[in-house]
Length: 303
Image (cartoon, rainbow, N blue to C red; front, top):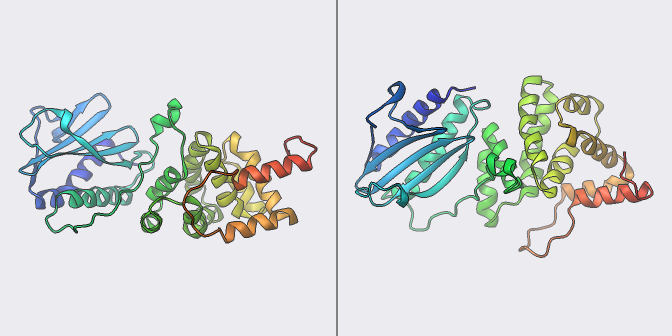
């Protein structure tokens, strides 16, 4: 767990070398609270940089760190700032390792924009995760990309596969990512029986499940937690930290997939179909499984 000033100072020092190398220097406001070169406006904390190439702003707000660029350094108006990236950030969950990963992501984006050595062909940017405020307000629902982004912030070993997934397909494919990488990390955490780590994990999973689309809920219940394979010890350890909305569906999924009727679905999870361009969406595996369970119970939801 980090304090805000600790995080602000860490980002300033963690990006200083890259920002200076690209010709920028930090802007020191007249009123530097706590000795930090940070402009504060309510819940917004901004770090500004200025140079011949323009301006850079790193803004901390809620569970996000936003990076902005502006090409005209002489224009003092804030209206010419353009959002370059949105990065997940949580003081309660982050430690120094997470802070270092955040700085690496900021440095990479800054280098892509301003470095004279950058490649002529720039890589496409990852899709922006859904913010917590947008999900809580109902303006958006969490998707598979947001889940992967949040878990990649918790587990640094997922960062490269997360980026590689998008670079390979030109869009983020959640099933491919979780079947091959993300699910195993989650299962290993539950199997460890470390209550602190399991609680930290389910804080993310519960939030995404409660405010996610039906496809995202299926991703959590089937592709990820379905891999507990109805193991009584794992299900018991996980159940303690599941939110009420998640508990019954997840335990049902595990029971279903452990039986003969679940073998076909489990094979599909292990061998997802090859990537094809987007077409009209059909019901996901989670919806299919729940529908089959309902039919077997005379049209009533399975209990």
